Image 1: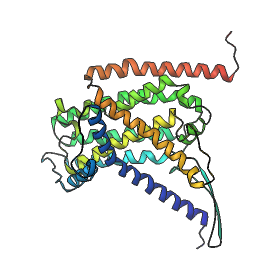
Image 2 (image 1 turned 120 degrees about the vertical axis):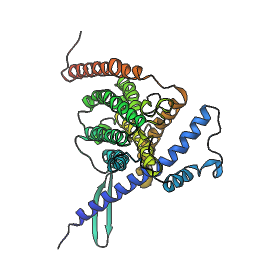
Image 3 (image 1 turned 90 degrees about the vertical axis):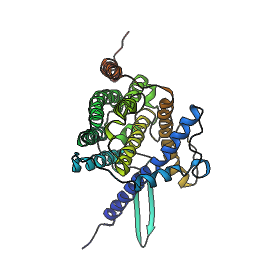
Length: 358
């Protein structure tokens, strides 16, 4: 049977990209736990991790070993199948959303190997679909089911209350999160994440959509259950919220999903408002590898800035009351997002049709 060499190469390229993206995300999560402890310690005048390994660098490894070896205790009255499936759903949906995230600029490769001439364009993303941002929001909504099912299946009052809070919070703030991106989509003229980045070659969209960016960041914090919107996990009220009954790797999966979702919101903020991999300034080099790596470094630097912002806010702001949470979402963020859409649409219509106001 004759196989098309280009098809084999493309299939191999996709597998390698999936492995690199998924492996990179899973490797970054432990580093983020260390980074968060260090940042919180620095801001709050504490030491942070400093016992396990030099500068406490082996603390994430120690935590991982502990969680891996710890017994998974299933409550006797729990629905065992759903109880075990819930954290898996949360992690899988969080990882799958990165399939449409572009990490760098396309690179044209010319290679002669074993008598074959290969001319390919290397893409620094797993796939590009014309509804990329809708795909991300859809998977985020499915991930919410994992949290709700985990709290319900535990048969615990604290876990159930946390799951109900999470459902109400995510429904509320998914609306404002989605609406805050519509202005960007109107300007870019596409739902593809790659097209949105390419549309910012001259000017980043933060220049035109600063109010939308502020609304997006606030909604993103709430969507990921992070301080000051960590009501589903409020330890002072609900012990630990929806994951109260989880231990070992079940708890670890929920924690991993939270950090992966933080990376996703940071990546979206970078792509939608700060040009994605587009550099602030670019250093042209005769060495190809430098030109290839530069956009990836810029993308990662922007993402880590927003991750630092997550931690800074956690160390600074207190938790909101639940009525304040709902009031902010429904009475402030959603109306402001709709106003931003209307203004952006009107301005776009005026510019495209060369309408003179005066």
